[in-house]
Image (cartoon, rainbow, N blue to C red; front, side, top):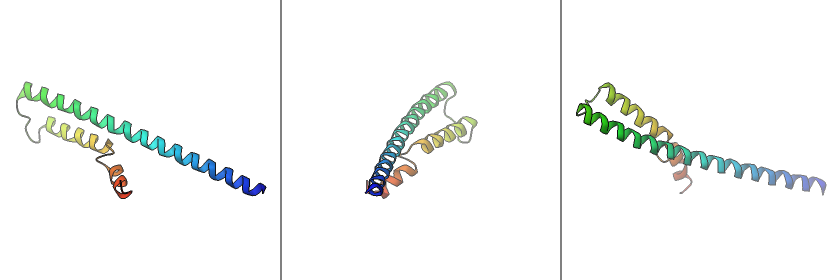
Length: 93
């Protein structure tokens, strides 16, 4: 009896820990998504300012390279664009 009660308590503690881990992962993904959105809005403003100030951004220019890198960084942060979204698809969501 005692061992069964200990096993149940252990299993319940495991379930609580798994639930907390899932909650933390969800909250981190939401924070990363929001940060990626904020970066994209910022990049849009930077691109608009550069276009007004200098005209068209030349392909391969330092500004173009930086904007490309920055968009890639936002994509890496964004769980909807990256691997997390693929994980959700595999879960049937």
